[in-house]
Length: 207
Image 1: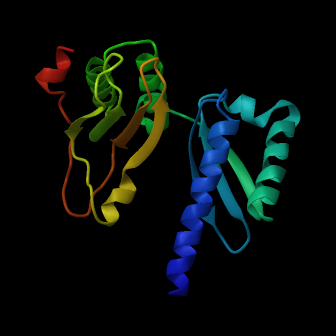
Image 2 (image 1 turned 180 degrees about the vertical axis):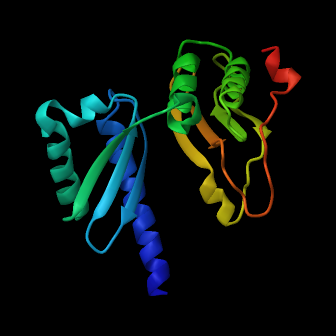
């Protein structure tokens, strides 16, 4: 039971750190965070579009961020590494933010989702799912959900940890829209099956 509590506690800490960094490093293009605990230190790897904005001149920005993380989350031995995002179309948070940006500009939700799915798969993802829920039409329309997926997206079991996932929200004039994105990155190895490169369906190619 103690081990179970530890895993739950670690997951909560990671979620809270991710939320904090997500709001703090918006301009740097924050995407995700990975946390690895060792007997000596807690290594926090932050993935962003612009590492220079996180590191700062002579490392002052990252030093300040590290001190804040240590105090805010009780991680005295925290060490932050900054990595540049290799492909933003394989990062769920960045994809969801792009979807939000387009929805807030008034672009049709179904069209946006199909275009983004196509782009994600064309960039090598083995699976992708986008869900948009809320006021997807003009003022006065009922809330609804659009769910589109391509390729293989596991929904249960330990293999779900291989799926990158992020959520955000759009606020167009006619009401809030929640956006969730799941992506299986290229090269992912599943223990129960072999997933090769996915072709973009014709229904999405024409969008």
